[in-house]
Image 1: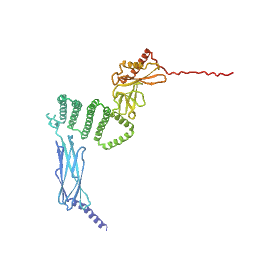
Image 2 (image 1 turned 60 degrees about the horizontal axis):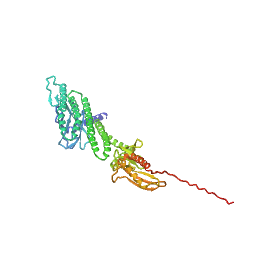
Image 3 (image 1 turned 60 degrees about the vertical axis):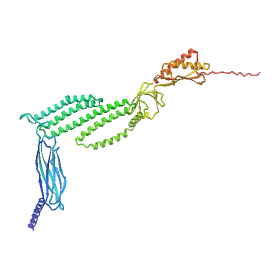
Image 4 (image 1 turned 90 degrees about the vertical axis):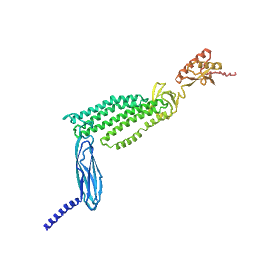
Length: 499
């Protein structure tokens, strides 16, 4: 019984080993080649043919192993099928890094397949050896002219660096003056500004690029080369961010401010500083996102987080945003300009507008010599009296009372003459001084002198001088200016008693 069990077990093991092997023999593989040496090329392609010798359809999938950092391997198709007694083709495209001067890789392509109606998967592996040997050429173009043994990679590196330095000097001292000469012939300053912005960054980029590309000639470890190119990418993003920042500030904002000075509205005077600050943030953020993407950080989550943060900040800064839009609406309505004199409803103080900012407006108090900072929302909700609109002329009135015994016509003539004598009083129609007899007061005859002052800033001086001169003329002419008084009459009543 024990012997029969051993015989059965042996037959089972033989069958389990032989049958899969016989089924695997039903697929044949043919490879165009397994080795390649790349000197100037960057890409090599291999072909794998699958011959299905089975009576059922074959289904396969592919996978790649042992791919060095920076190399690219494209297997096409990744999945497919082969009908009975036909063949299929798999192409393996291997691309080496451009900066790689030397290198070697053994890349493995794994083909897994199965036949319809079966449950067992089979696996086939192909190994491809790639050897990279870059020739030592100056600028990647010219052969090293030095005799052996000096025509090695080190002298080629030095000669390439010197060539790039020469290219930089050529750009500075030959191309630069020609471009500058051409820009001077144009009427606009845009090309001059662009030239001044781009001149130094272009030269710096050429020199750095030359040094980095020349370093690839040296027999450096692949890890070092990768770090060099990583630093170069970061440098490139920083340089382009700097150029974008300069163009934004020195060109767009510069011309925006010049245009704002020519316009009558102050809306652009407020909007341009806001756009300037937002632009600074956007440009710097774009550069930071570019650097993060180099390190493989998914910036989509970062941008989404910034959006959520923007909503939170917007809710938290409702008052600030309200003041911002209120300031824009004030300027859009042209309620006042910087330098205008205004009064607020319910406030007899005269203010001069000093600056309209994004959040508040600065007002100079003429009476108290103080600077008041008022939120834009408060101004937008207030009734504003602009004292210089439609012009700087200002009308004032002076109330005068004389005694009841005075000559009315003489009083009116004196008031008119005093007004006409003052140099700051307008004398032509429709601004000629006006005198009115307005009322019979309790103690006086009331008159009103109405004059137009040439400048609203002279209103207080003119009013004071006119009152002083009126008092002098009244005293000269013997006209009395009464003051409130009350006469009290006491009547004595004597009761006589009859005796």
